[in-house]
Length: 414
Image (tube, rainbow, N blue to C red; front, side, top):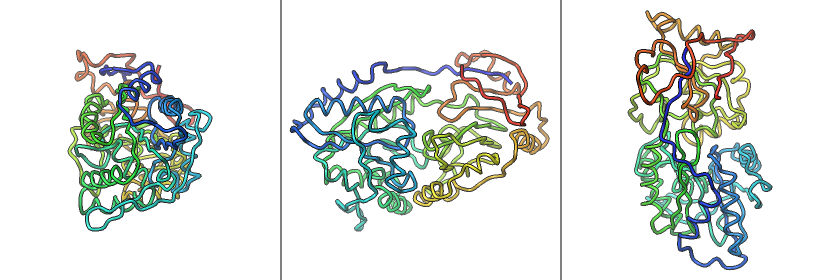
């Protein structure tokens, strides 16, 4: 095995608070009356610098005389309970102390409008009582569908703030109307019938760092988000090879991707709404463990072919089944073959490659789908990466190393 480094474009914002202050000051926002209640959204994803970003947004509006507070905006995540959603935020480092504002969580919603043939549009009850709502989220390609707007501000307005009621309804409606149309219509309704002040979009680079932060008012938010999504696609990481026999993923989790491991990286996409084409083709995916921040939510394990007993034992059935049932993604909770040790799983995978000998197998190992800049690849790829300017060899070749317990040694990220 060789440890290699992929060299991606790396724009990065060093001063998060300064960037937030500038974009909001330049946005021509309406006057914030003293004492105005300002709901600021926080989602369930592990977004780069999210604590510092939320703290800066809170500080900006407090300095203008507002009374900012945080509202969890994550659909049915956290087991679809108000306490569970606060716990999800805590695992991401988002607490009242860290961001400097109260966190007000509820699963109750109010109906604020209708779309299509009388489909209700819901909004978090607490957010609906605020004088202003500020949407804060990462912009990136979605794991379920493709469209002009995917994962970002409009989706958070519709599904995140729609809580479980909205998330369930919009996923069902998407089977008839398509997800892009449902999000667009629901987003329009939220912006028309609720006090959305602005949206703040975060784009990350391939190293899981903040590349850019932008803001828009409801008047041009959708148009701006479309352009931000294109930039996010340009900066998104990727695997260095398209044909892989065995992909070893050390960990999956909801803070990594909505489906545990990002199909935009792996090419794995079992989806009722349709499978989108992807250049990467992987024979077998072996997932070793859940992240600590997953809190037992194993959504996405159904995208793997092999896993471990230790992962299966960590699964919270309520968290996982609630999430997958709400999103109509039953297949993503399906448990694959599981083994006591990594060695057993790898052995079964390599012995199932037909006439390919283990020494010739095309093996790739990554920590997770947010961390693919440094990875392990087998010697079968050597002729392909030799001479590539976007790849540097860090060390190797070495053997795939297992400890005395039969599990793979830790993957170095230094």
